[in-house]
Image (tube, rainbow, N blue to C red; front, side, top):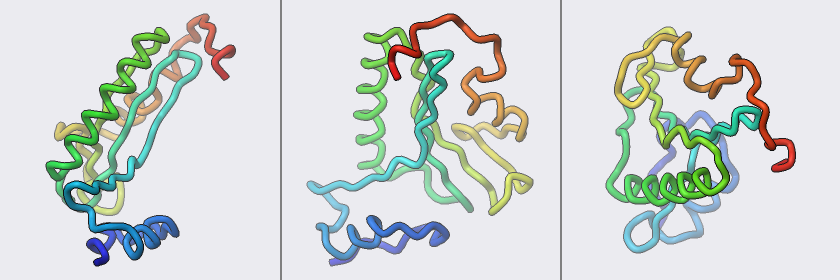
Length: 136
């Protein structure tokens, strides 16, 4: 049985369409969750995971919360072991289809400038000497 229709219906995905037709329904014990964004600043050794919601879509369903926790704990462990900073698994919500219609970051209203600062992961700060180049 196919799963529910894509919420935004704005970004075609061949794999998403195929999954909905060919894999089990997204219900326990088979769970499917796509991570929207992983941001990495190699120079500052920082990483953040970001879930994007548009037009008041629900923050997360119970199974998404479990998967988010699994991914966050694994990334946090990796960052600790490799001297990186994990900036969390965050949710950004757009109140409409443009930034001008309002933004919340983890349910806190923020400006576009604040969003730019958060998502840059320190890119505009002076470069910190690291061994990050060896990582690549």
